[in-house]
Length: 169
Image (tube, rainbow, N blue to C red; front, side, top):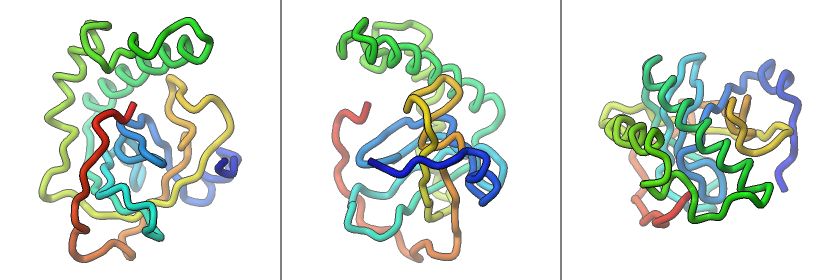
């Protein structure tokens, strides 16, 4: 299990908030987090856990997109609380489609913005985890203050893409 950190200490040490994890595989792979104090989408290059660092594409997400992403995250977080309490089954996950009309609407509206543009910045992330339930409506414990980005160690050429698992929820 990952070490748990104090949120205020992390914020004081330059870590920033993670608002939503859109994909997870051995750690955060895609989502929404502050980078330099501004909300950005992030997407990892691959799932190679042999790397010493986690390299990501990051690109800005405007205020409207942040609000929509957080609304969708809150729907997921409510479902996850029910699931963890034994009151919901995996097949009722809103990401399966046809279960929550608003979640489906948000998925359609947000999909075009979740793909990394060619001009995305490349950063290396350092992750820390704070105490609390992993999927809160206010954000993920990967970080209410869990990402610190660094331009200096990013590779100059992209790593070779690897196939992704079909289900990351």
